[in-house]
Amino acid sequence: MTDSMARFKEVDLEEKKVLDAGTGACGMTKILEDKGAEVVSVDIERERMIDCRSQTESTDFLQADLSNMRFIESESFDHVFCKGTVSALSINKTLFVTSVLRELHRILKNGGQLTIIDYYPFEEESSPVPLDEHQVELWRLEKAVFELLGEGHLEEYSPELLKDELRSIGFGDVTHSIFRDELPWSDELLKEHEEVILENIELIEEEYLGAALKKKLRDIISSTEKKKVVSGAQYELNAKR
Ligand SMILES: C[S@@+](CC[C@H](N)C(=O)[O-])C[C@H]1O[C@@H](n2cnc3c(N)ncnc32)[C@H](O)[C@@H]1O
View (cartoon, rainbow, N blue to C red):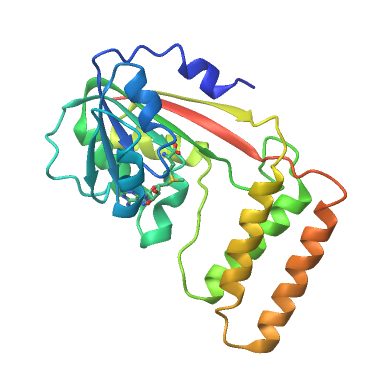
């Protein structure tokens, strides 16, 4: 297992044209800018970018869907970073990951690099690391609540599946490595998940269902009080156009 961010520090991005695909809470944009890259940051949600814009100096922010970036010229980027975005694609609308990967292939220069960093699916049978039962239970509950409300939710892809997709689109040198955050979930992160789940349970109209889901949530949270919740596996996938 390798520490992805430690390896990332070695990547030379000086004066490179880089796309930060999925700005989110600005986790990557500032890092890319500080490495001397000419950054374009794209997110489907405008609110996300407003806060991020105040933390950066020269980054170009665009509100757009990654599956359709017609305003970006073909073969114009040296590197695309996609951190935590692939698993978030299904939150806003049903979207085939292939349509995004094709678009990233189109905008990359020949020889350009795609880096995807994301969570490995939380499935006991396929996970490359032992999973924390509390995290899996909480994750399942969160997704079940969103399903009941008819809302989109995170959908993790296995790097093996993405690698096949990337090769069929025309990417080469496709490799991946697995890593894991060594630190357990902080109490704040646990609280954040608990609050999101609870807020959404409140929206369920059927009272008996809401009560049962709240009890399940209380049970999971009280069992995490006895021990820390450790993170699942993540992967870093690299491919060349
Ligand atoms: C977990 S956040 C990304 C985090 C960020 N890259 C980082 O490193 O901190 C995922 C982001 O992907 C964005 N996103 C999801 N689907 C998208 C799409 N089709 N087009 C553009 N952005 C999208 C979401 O709005 C969200 O801000």
